[in-house]
Image 1 (cartoon, rainbow, N blue to C red):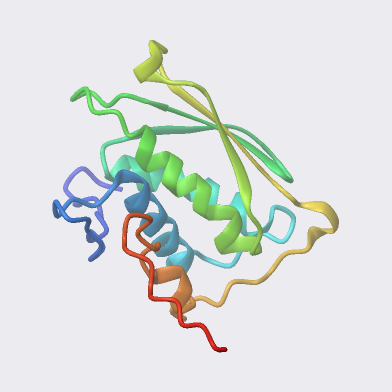
Image 2: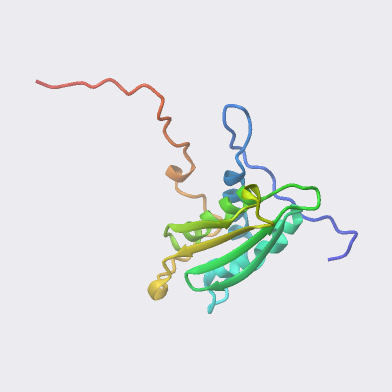
Length: 169
């Protein structure tokens, strides 16, 4: 990429809480969805999740965040992120991105462990992402199709009053 080219920055999704702010984790998940929709066909040996991780450093560099893929193998990825030159720390953005990958690519939940964190005094944030890769039960994502409505709906408000209960005699 030449120095004169502008880096692509994905638009901010239309999700906001009462204050009008989008959480960094929600934005990270949005970035994962955008990357999946635009991703080239996955490397057959690595699968879609690890292929998407290969693209992550460039994506985050366009957002002025430093992300490094330290190690990968089926079912596990170790990712390091460090504060940018402006002092910003993208750890929550990266965490949202990483948490979304197993669900978007394989249809399974993953576990994300933040081994070290800048906010806890570390020089960088180090994440370990684990997911079930047994038997290569890969679910080919449907690119370009909207996710199911239940995944887009806001979670129920635990402080909202309960609906009335009707009893039948």
